[in-house]
Image (tube, rainbow, N blue to C red; front, side, top):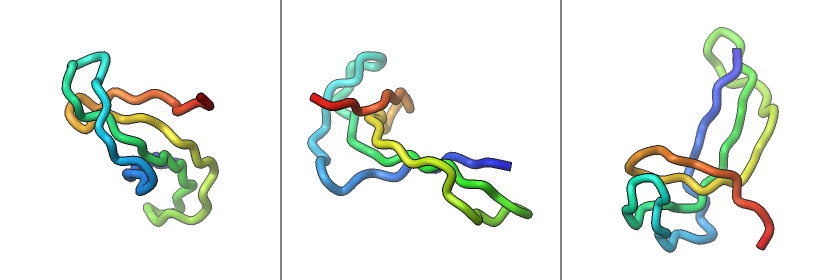
Length: 65
């Protein structure tokens, strides 16, 4: 199977306003999708930078500009 893990990105941790819950809790994060074999992450399939709200779990890709 495949599992997606999201971890805070250490580059920019200034909180932004979430468009869903209106809290200042949106941070930069990195999303990785892993191929798992017997529940052990084996190979990373993809990696993307995203914005994620730490309260309501809203997320969107972080694009250029």
